[in-house]
Amino acid sequence: MRGKTVVITGATSGIGEVAAERLAGMGARLVLVARDKARAEHTLARLRQAGPGVAHTVHYADLSRLAEMRRVARDIAAAEPRIDVLMNNAGAMFSSRQVTEDGLERTFALNHMSYFVMTLALRDRLVASATRVINTASDAHKGRKLDFTDLQSARAYSGFDVYGRSKLCNILFTSELARRWAGTTVTANSLHPGFVATRFGDESGGMLSRAVRVAKLGAISPEKGAETLVYLASSADVAGSNGLYFYKSRPATPTPEARDPDSARRLWEESEKLAKMTN
Image (cartoon, rainbow, N blue to C red; front, side, top):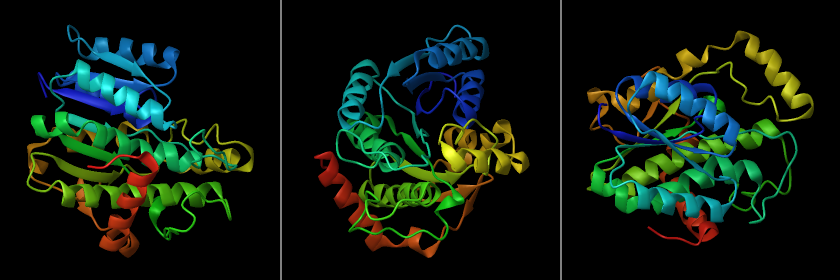
């Protein structure tokens, strides 16, 4: 990874922070996308210890807002002549339904649309750089199905169900990205990191936060959860892998709903309309 540039969202805590540190220790230069300045500065300090002498940087954005997604992608494209890895890793779960200024349900906006918009907005850089796109999904997609008449969960809302559907979106987006950009130098893969004991879900609110805290008593460590992220970013073994779903650094099989090409195509088309962009 020495001399390579890794753009990563969601790197100020949990598996994203661990993966960033490990990649910095391998010689990579990290470009963070963060919202919280204090956390970002803390992470940068750790990266500088792991990879001294490398100009790790951070860009600030609220990735639940479409304008911010586009703006930070433009800023990164202007600053970075080469991107070797794009790691879409930001995510959250909310106990109550919240709507962004764009009229999007917040989980869908942050967990899916930020992946979609960031990737498409950086297309020129990614294609020019033979980039690996890595999307953090989850086995929480199991048992979920998209309702294209209610992608914003306006009719019924359950925090964990909506989160699971957003992770289904991550897998469908990955497979459709691999299909549409086939023949370019870009590869795209998604992963399930495992159920990890991080601060994820702690700020969801209400009973959901309490349930997540109890469940995390049996979770794996962030260090263990980051292993597949680091593997997909750095291993020569997956240089040609495209459109796959990984767990424990091996290809895994997601649900039939996550492998449905019609759903993948339709999600892409609906996301284009919401983002007002095509590629």
